[in-house]
Length: 563
Image 1 (cartoon, helix red, strand yellow):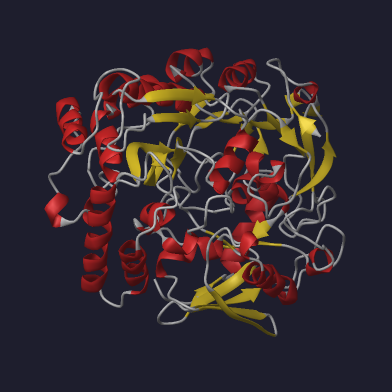
Image 2 (cartoon, rainbow, N blue to C red):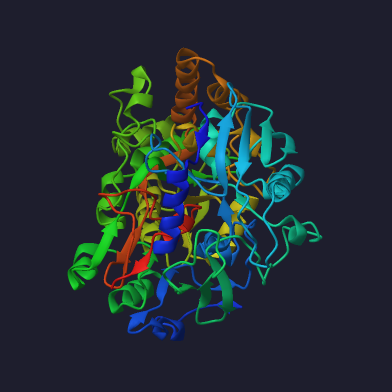
């Protein structure tokens, strides 16, 4: 992987050609919003994106993961990264973006970017290497902004070059480093508390400008001075529907061209409605799982966590929850197959998940639990009734269905008392980060190795006491051995050392069950080719279809209206 990446004249011209060729609280009702009826050119509707996240707050702060800008994805129409990496294909060559070249050192403890000299912020000021250095420095100085959990060292500027050093190897984090969005220093250096600023008049370098923020729609207009050329799609909008059903109605009606959300029976209720409708669910090294809060009762007991895993029918979750779009995980390592096959330790090659209700009951009985299998009667060895609440956001139909199935298994098969809740997405996110939950469904990040899967769940560098905000390891899993093995894996100099560390990581994960792996983590891509072309597809997977990732910028610059 270590080599110098140069944006040749051909590459620069190609990037420019792509850009030239195209691309308060908001609570839209179940009907299409007024914004969806706007006309961009002729009879072509505005290019509309939507998610089923319910009410939003007028917050365009790109640093805050729960802001409307990040949640809906429009942050990446305004702010850009230095490099565009294809997260679906780790072997694909990244695309130069705000950086025209970059080079890692031998052990991946520093990277030097050469910054383009023809980029301007939307307020007319030039984007400089100092802006890039500031964008990294502010993350180093404020841990709350370092959502990627990168161990920053020195950050220096030399002409058009910016060198970012790290205190450990970032071999497993190259995509995270590439995806850091850049902000203007002259704006953000004057903000007293970046974590709280609403940034309602954002200044970025991206292909679009925020035009209006209303209850009907968040409207963005093409940036006429964009460094890659003004996008072909002149107006785009983002909105949030109350649930997946409302989003489906908007997609079928043509009011939304790009939807990020689960659609039950998508073949019949979406694809069959129009030959131009497309569903694409790409997945890589990531999964959806049941996350336990291991820092408090009752899931501080590994025996109970093991028993829960044993009674979950993953095939049922796939068939009923995702209608087959998300495949059930089979390997006990939690790694999706076949993409993760080469990372499965030898001792686990043939180990698969099996539903074993009798085994789970016996496990709890042997551990001193009583009332096992008697609904609402399970009592722990200390005489405490096992009562929990589980939650996923209202409107997330697939997660809600899956959580109901899991809750029934815990209640009817094990005897637990389970309450299922459906808070808003904002409340759920806040509770997850602060550790205010018993169990919930969540996903892991993906990467070119399994590191992100296991680090998101078990890395002690993410560990926070309950009540403090965690950016991952939401379940507060505390294992020094896991943290050490993860660090060894990330910094290993040889394949042998890396494999040995991964064996340890997988063993701890399987034995301790901090999270129950359930389904492959697909991107829920639903879009229409009726009015716009340029989408990534199964035949041309140049980017993930997820609109909330940095590569959304690349997609937007490739979009163009159908003639």
